[in-house]
Length: 273
Length: 278
Image 1 (cartoon, helix red, strand yellow):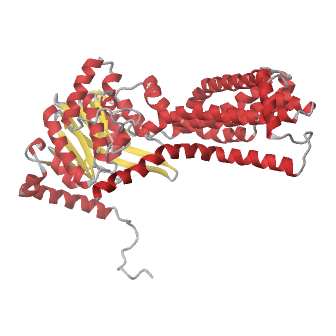
Image 2 (cartoon, helix red, strand yellow; image 1 turned 90 degrees about the vertical axis):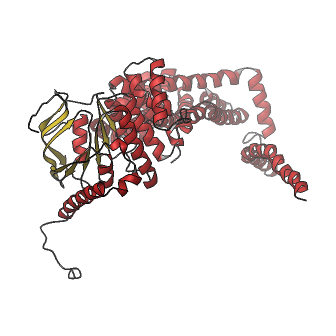
Image 3 (tube, one colour; image 1 turned 30 degrees about the horizontal axis):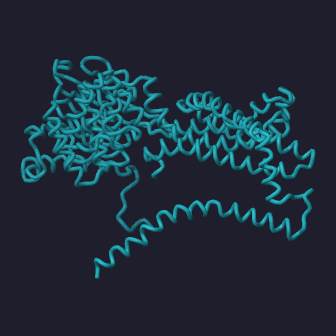
């Protein structure tokens, strides 16, 4: 009896594994599907004209057209290159600054309030001034996005360095470590989880700042694409652009930033508290 | 103490007084500590909490500069940390992003020892500390006791002349602590290191020490010095608890430490009988 039961017990356990994975994928997509359904229902039920809101089908057709003509690739490519360049630059500059401030207790204390202030004055708030200084060019976009990205990176690097237990440093010094050793073996790996958090936050803020700056600067990028489409009332283009902006952010975050986080943080058990 | 600089003197602390600056003004941590640790000796220091024993250890390690007095190691003035003085901390000192093997070999890596040589030393210490099979684990995958074994092994692997231990087993559960203490005694027997070990546990101090120092309450100074007969390396807890001589020493030391603790109660206010406070 019991031997007969065993396989039948195992079977329902084995089956859901694949099913659950499918279901969890479905679960992620569910709100999106609901939004599309809602959008379509409102469009049809309220009889909204295409001048105000196009249907999902029209938007999809516009998407296909934008892909076919290469317009989307060009504008999205501009935005992605921008955010990539800004991220690399901000890390290269922001991490050393964060270190310099973080290792010095007095510098860290005096800079903390200032960095919070800078975080409050968003990159977009700098746009009027930067446009006056640098004009309506990609340089303005670069400056604003780098500013937006670099502040959380500096701040979180500083916090990361500050929260490294003093014993790590003392232990290594009594093993004969000099400054360079401390930097490579203690400060950098110790602050890395925090740096990645800073990068993730920065990418989120930076992406939004980038789209906003592109709208005003008007020299390419997805922000420019949707803002220019407004001039000709191309509702379909605007909606496609918005969806692409959201999707690209998810892709960048999930496919690039999060794997780095998982690689370092999860393995060292730093997140398990 | 008669001869201030004999050749077997490893660490000489003279007239060490230390003050900390706090928000409420200066606090005196220690008061004129004089102390000599001879080569190959295992010296334990026991005292009530807050008596300045960690301050003394940190000064010998070179992490802090004495406000007054001097510390010499092998006749050289201590002016900062150095690899001839290894330190084992109470906790949080091995690096969570390094495996057991790489943590233990870290000192040798810093010293520029070749990979092959390093692996040999690390393997020997992993065996000595019972960490075999855990070489590639990260610290968060280990128990508290095993993490302290890694910390001890790391310090030993770097082969310092003197090892300073700051309550290394205080954060470990009681049963594990007994094992770690026996292992430490055996490790010392196998390597003949000079060890300075501070603790607030009287039993631990008597069990491990060749010589035991008692510190007064803050500002701390050395109150008494007791030679413990027999090498610590030969001890285990069963024979230790059954030995009347050892128990006699432990009782004497406990009494001295408790006097200091009693004296550390708030003074100045007149004593009142219990219940008379209302």
